[in-house]
Every structure is written in C-alpha cells, then in structure tokens.
Image (cartoon, rainbow, N blue to C red; front, side, top):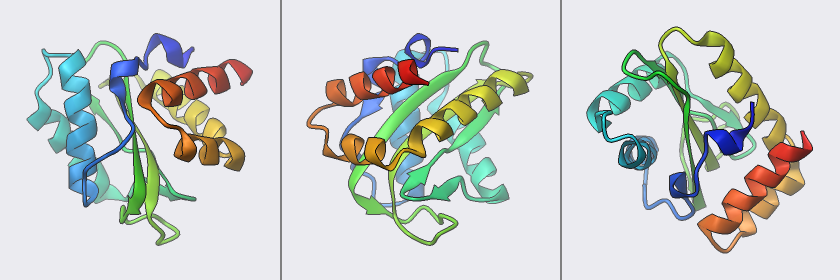
Length: 153
C-alpha cells in the first residue's frame, strides 16, 4: 500500500486552527469531505468522537492517529494536520499533540485499516522525521516529506 494512492495534497492542513480535540477532528474531517462530497462531516465526526470515547488515539510523542470506520466508504481516506503550538489530545503521555493523521476506512476492512495505521506509526517513530514535519514551511512540503518517507519504508 502506497500512501500516495490515498493521501492527496489537498488533505494536508499545515496550520490547524483548532484549540481542542473536537476542533482537530472537525478540521481533518472537513478536509476529507471536501475531497469526498458524498460523505457527511457530521457522520464522520460522530464516528471519530465515538472512537475517542473508547480511548484516546493520542499515542504520545506529540502524535495522534484518530481513526474510525464508515459503512458509506468503499476505500481508505487519510488526512494530515499539524498544530505548531500543540494541543491537548488526552495523549497517553499527557503531553500536547502536534502531528495528526486521520484515517477513515470502510466498515469491513480491518486489514487495510490496520496496515495503514502500522505504516504511519512506523513513519512517525522516526524523531528526525517528526522534527522535519514540524519545520516544514508549507502543506506541499509536508506532503512531499510524507510521500518520500513512505517510499523509504
């Protein structure tokens, strides 16, 4: 699986305006609904908030990987956001999150969903890569970094 087949430049939010977890989810869901107009932002948000109630997807080290499944989807959708100042995402290390990958998958697609989460997790384990993402000057630069890193894996 190549992230370049799923993540498009228009799905990168290099400067999230959100002040809290719900705001991040709204901004990242909005990016997806702009690319996938058949999806309802409200239903996306509901699925994501329900998943967060089960346990935070803030995995620590400044990273959050919010995700959920939708019966309306027939393919994987990914958006990316960055908060330069960081924000509380109820992360397991109780520190702010700065880097967000949102994944939405079809309801019956555990394999693809888990492979994408694993790939993104491997990518973000690289502290140098995370620092480069934070220092990027544009959404285009972030997109190119993600695609290049994906090619390395």
